[in-house]
Image 1 (cartoon, rainbow, N blue to C red):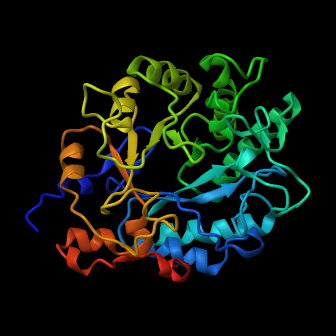
Image 2: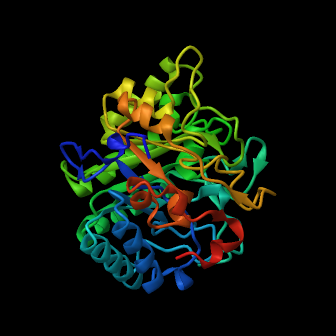
Length: 370
């Protein structure tokens, strides 16, 4: 392979985190934790990706200790002795294979429907009882509910540090709870948590500050955010760079160290008049390390490559543009999702010039992947 992949394999060094390369595994929900406890299969799954040379693994979404945090079957908890013991085994396996790992801490908000585990009677919780604009589901959160969820995230972050995780990622994207506070379409509150963007950020800011208080000044906190939502792919929190700056800088002040800017296609410009993607703009505005993501190594985007697509297989594609953007310093890290889901040795094969040996992505085999 003539392509210079050097930028992917340069060490990443920041004041709070050092990695052997610039490639991370993106968080991907797998529904492989019966009883909400990560077992041996989960440990093996993460260990294999670490053995495949990935610098940083971000776990699938793990739910914090709140009755309405979970919205899916067989998703791992990040609370309770049994689940935390399972995550300790994962941490030890990843470290033993030379990798580093963050848990993704998650609350699904109004995505939850009554009938879901662990308590089928619990509804979804959200800022205004809305799943999307004009779409009611569940209950609007009281101030007490807000305090409870903030405390649950802080507890989880404290547990992550105690278990030996190398940092934490807070899931503030894709139309889940934190993002439901950000998004005017789901946040119709009239108190201090609604209205202006500054008010809609208040929940996340208080949550990040609580996490920072628990883990101390030197522990890495990453925030995943997005413009698009599951409820509306065209939704936007910021229409201009100035609006993005107003969104990001208060989060920096609250304690975010790294931003994981989630897009469906990493190569798409975020605003007219510039080729920078969302991660590139985030780095330019904040000066902090940023992680990009979105259909790396694939010809189709996230949605088209899942069960929502009629396409039988998503083909591999080149990563020339990714390398060009990283060479230019547009963003610091790149998260890879389905390419690593399909083949834990994806990065090694790419590095060794064996791209033709990378396993193809066949959606029908997802349930067999581990």
